[in-house]
Length: 228
Image (cartoon, rainbow, N blue to C red; front, side, top):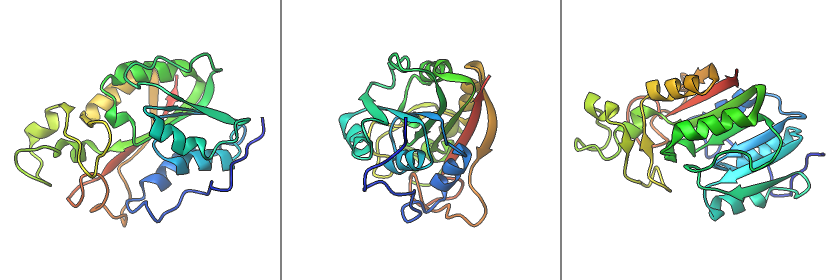
């Protein structure tokens, strides 16, 4: 299957990536030539365009709503890939499609309540040695959302109080689900996904932007895992 995009597809731009998160996510994806790619959440059409322009053999998107699905469909040649709308809290796999080499997710997994179920589906859908690459708002950022101590303040109690947080302008869409970094790492391990690389950003990046607006500390976390 050949790879192509419509005229609207362009390489990921840095104009709307002030914290550098997308750049690192793309670096974690690496060479996608000849790879079968599954996008869980369809959170960033620029990542879809990168996968196709990078020579991905095929692309399957799983979007939580029609709005996100349509943004990605506009980039796709129907002969190369397709997008389905699914409830990510109930989604149990690739809907009969072949296993994939790479699973990518941006701006999506922090909105999933049932993360263990989703990670089990990802593990099942990946070929042995396949990669899961995803990014989420950093737990330090989601912890302060809805805090009684106000914007930008982080208490230890807020960080360890996992669960739903209110939707904000900086975190739109379904309500974010705060979980600690330890929880992310544990669920990955329990679902047969070995952490291969991790980043909270680099020196010189703008850490005053991104989820939750201005504040101290990292704004996002990016993971690259290998299916064992």
